[in-house]
Image (cartoon, rainbow, N blue to C red; front, top):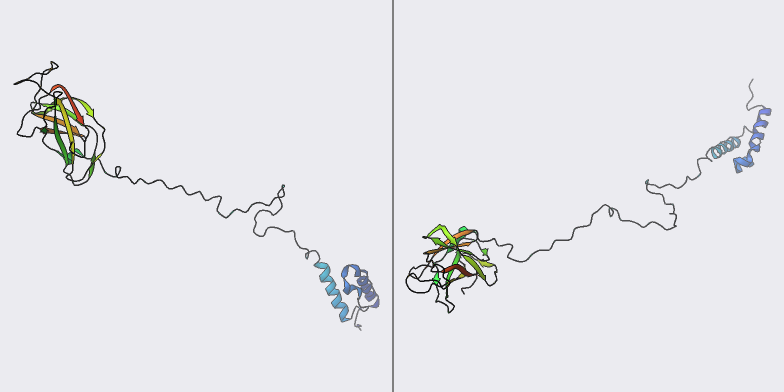
Amino acid sequence: MFRRGAPEGDAASVAGSGRANAATAGPCAASLPSRPDSPSFASCMLLTACQSGGGSTGAAPASTPADGGSSSAASPSGASPSAVPAGAASRPASPAPLPTSHGTTSATPACAAGALTPSAAHGLEPNPDHTYGVLLNLANSGSRTCLIEGFPTVAIAGQGDPTRSRPLKVTPEGTAHPVRLAPGGRAYLKLTFHEVMGEADGYCPSGATPAAPPSLVVGAAGGRFQVEMGDGGGNFAECDDIVRTTAFLSDQP
């Protein structure tokens, strides 16, 4: 027949083994029951096994970054690195705004030749220096405001034909400024010629041959405009093929 429990020799061996490990098994092993078949013996042995088996895993691991970031170890200088806002290194600086011009000159286009209409010339009284002047203007016949600026070219039309014109030497008078022409506005010019002296065909004090063309050709705004003498007609009698001219003016001189 089988007896309940283990043989006494085996029990003593187990009990001795349990006490021999008391130093490493903890407080439970120090009070190990002498009978291995008692319930308290089995419980104490189980607790001892759990404590000895979990000792290697219970130690706290070395501190590592939780999110895979850089190590928190101190730098060789001992100074903590400065915090940098997220995105600050990759975000470029915003460019400074460009200055804005408030002038009207650059926004107003130059007058086109097709938008200008010449007036007839009006002769002035001779000057004491044997010169005389004529006034004329160019009107903005277009639908938009435009700018005209500078000095014109002047030629005398051979036999009244602009294609056979002979250019005159132009001497500028004064300073050129932009003239803003609203639709219907006018820009004025004053031309001054050397007067032909005497009667009939006349003569030039310089000895040059006088000329008396029926019209002038005035160059401006990239075009050429034929101008006739008003005041009942007449010719542009001149000497030396020289003319003094103002720049375009906003007011009649």
